[in-house]
Length: 166
Ligand SMILES: [Zn+2]
Image (cartoon, rainbow, N blue to C red; front, side):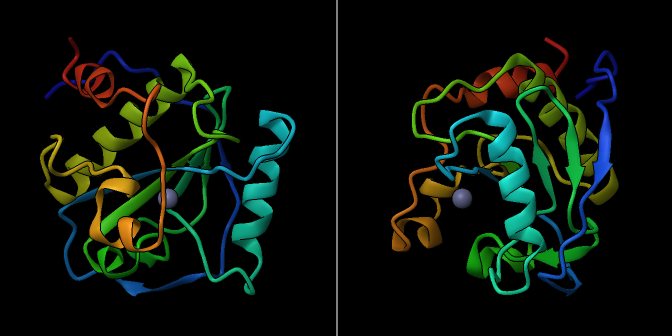
């Protein structure tokens, strides 16, 4: 696991009130995409941050990654975000901006996601593997909720290769 060649992204702060206290342990990260259906990826990014900032939504993630690779920090990584029900207590959650199923994931998004996951893996001591990085739709919680994110064209192996510096 290296990832030393990854460039830190532009980072903005977009705090959400939708979280609980400290996570007792961290064993991985659930990978999500936004699927808000906005006309443009820029509108989708801002609509997602507004939704997460609204206490009525009761949802959040630790980070949201825009199509241009900008990373929005939404919930402190030490705290429990509200993204995947029972998984929240032991998994981080990250959202890639992707308005609709099948929309492209940009290279800038892969780069930022790999950079952020490397930081989190070091900080909490979990490996970056297929098993520790479930897509939302693969989890029992996501299946129960009818979630379809992320699915192709998202390519988790491409992400893992970036993390490994391949
Ligand atoms: Zn999701």
